[in-house]
Image: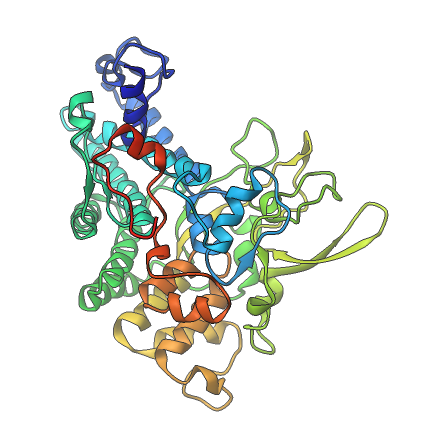
Length: 470
């Protein structure tokens, strides 16, 4: 039974110890003796929905799966000395990942635990005696989150087990890796359903909206090669006039500008106290030092190749990258590291720092650049450049080395969205990962553009196959 429950943890969330003799299907949240008695009232579903949104803190953690893939496996950043298991973390940087890597297994668990929370809500709310509008909204939000997670998973691992409902122990052994095409089809179906259920705006900051579902759907279509449908979804968001670029790029990262007009979907944090869900991006991306009274983790240290990518006069460089820090004794240490989530007013708590920064998953500038990618129309790209007072594509002064729309987009997305967990996924989507990364010394092959399936997963179920190259 112990081995069986361990396997289930890889497919779903088990809220019990490994040695427990009960099936997870018989368990409910700790505040209730039975799950069937819990998922009844609006209060129950509010609590469960909040818990589902809380999984964003794990998936989009600065040392979470999307960060490691989106940035550390790209050409934007590196790591040197870093807190935790250095050898396993360096494997991402060096493209030397092994199926026994503990981080890869942790990421796999993080996703499937998060999906369990989402799937149980979708399962229970279907028959709950609640207001129809409320049920529809919750369903839309959970479908959005499920789509977001599977979108990340299929880009990270390729084929993965597709679980859309709670399953029994016996059923779990027959849930094998679904083809990527099947996963994309499910994501598209879920997002189409989500956008029909979600409101245009939300009274609760950080909740999914129709615009968020459509923006994500547009990116999913682009990734699957369907530019026509991508353009349709993205253009509807553009035409809605619900979003706009902030006048100043730097102001995007001001903690006073949370949930701005540029934000389409944003993860909510609350700094200031140890009991709050405070942000870790500033601490994790700070160099591996305790010079300021907290221990920086040293994640995503900026490489010169990205530093040199910015054009002369591009204010996004200064807004995105710090060049060093001064300790309490006045000693300056030169180091390039992400600046976007700096919160120097946050209080120090137990050698940590309770920062107040949100994390933007989808924003309007991203959507504009995706629109150019989908349509070939540089008007949208030029809106992004205009904010930074840079020469527009097609006009005098535009850098000649980005002569095609494709190269112009690659450059623009890199500097506009630096450290926002986009770069590696962008290079993969445009089939540019191999030529770009190998030219910069990365030991990457086509097979290494997917992470390995963790050994422990395959130990628990020998029918789960491994990715090529591992």
